[in-house]
Image 1 (cartoon, rainbow, N blue to C red):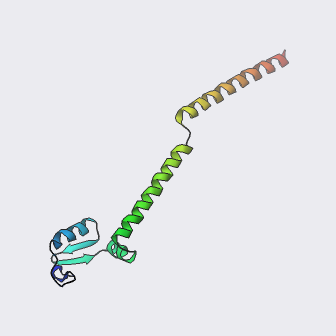
Image 2 (image 1 turned 120 degrees about the vertical axis):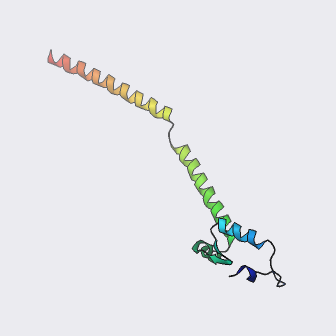
Image 3 (image 1 turned 30 degrees about the horizontal axis):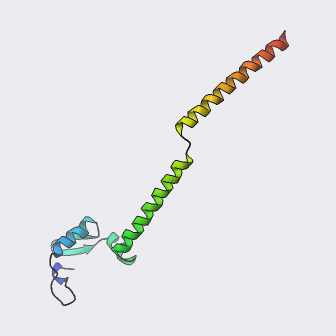
Length: 110
């Protein structure tokens, strides 16, 4: 569409229309080519799925879900201190067990 074709309900040209189209171009909804405005695939998708506000609403929902998932993941992951402590205890236990088995084997040989 040409910029001159955009009018309000009364048929008057819209004021500051270029600012509006530049905003739409920054959001990758349209491509401005000379005095024409071309709808992008992303722009078409937005229109087909309920418009810009619906898009922003869905985007916010996705971000909230992602945030909640990352918070849950943080709660589930053991802290490094716990992990290191567990490893230390496991190594120490293995060392004691090995030492004990060496003594038992040594006693049986004698």
